[in-house]
Amino acid sequence: MFDTFKNRLEITGTLTTITALRISAGRSTEPIGTDLPVIKDALGQPLIPGSSFKGAMRSRLESFLRGIDFSLAANPAIEAEWSITNERLNGKNGIKKEVEKELEEYPQEERSAKRDQLLTNKIINETDLASRLFGSPWIASKFQVRDLTVVSDTWFGQYQERDGVAIDRDTETAADGKLYDFQVVPAGTQFEFCAVVENAKECELGLLMIGLHQFETEQIPLGGGRSRGLGVVKLEIEKMYWLDVNNKPEKLLTYLQELVNSNLGDKLPSHQDGKESKQKWTQSLITYLTENLPKNSTTTTHTQS
Image 1 (cartoon, rainbow, N blue to C red):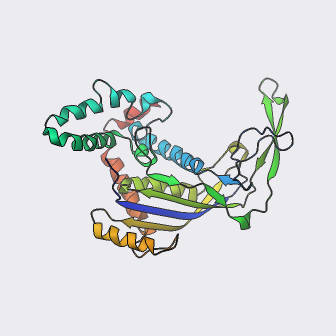
Image 2: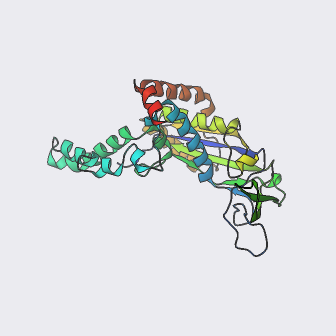
Image 3: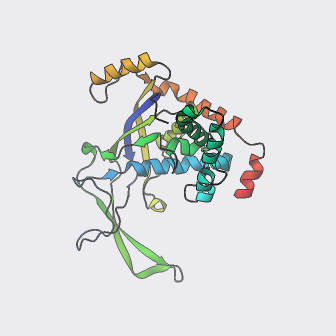
């Protein structure tokens, strides 16, 4: 089914490193320099990939959802634990076969248009909550995070280098030949944060609000070396521009006209303050989870854990 624009939430803010940060670019092949450099942009400035931020948030939210019931967050690393496996989608008794069976109830001339609609609805209905927001092999992500670029006034063009060593588990001392050094981005460095979520339901927005709040309260570390205390970050959200045009074509037309006549980042007359809806969205998530909690949830969770 073709995408239909319904709503959009734009989030901007600043991410500050509370402790030093190390998101590694892999082992260096340079003859001179650190063994493990951090990821940098084309100008040699520190960079936090949007995928790193998004992945850390998803992992934390999935752990919350699995704590309620395993069906709420599929395991993306194991296909057998996906909410829709390849067999369920394409198998002999899979979703696609079910759709073809249901199409027999429609006139021949209507089947082509109905096929995509029926397939999309079935896939969405069987997709777990986390995958509906963050994406999966069979459904696109609604939540996009741009790479976080450094705020130049907070970074002075230098990295810190620290030493590390591997420990021999038998002797509990430093292993021979295992000394290395690694780069970190200093504490106090700030990065520009910008994210967008489109066509999300209120319960999905509620899940996103909880994830963002985890970053606001320094609960989700980023990068490597977390056992050393690295990667503690704090998100400060500055703006949340919310636009809901669902079933209101005239509002979408007005928004498009405002968009053409505005500058990037402007608050348009059609925008609402998304911060005012945070409590409503979060409550919608709680209601969704309560209504979809299986009666045997406690037994199921205990068995799989």
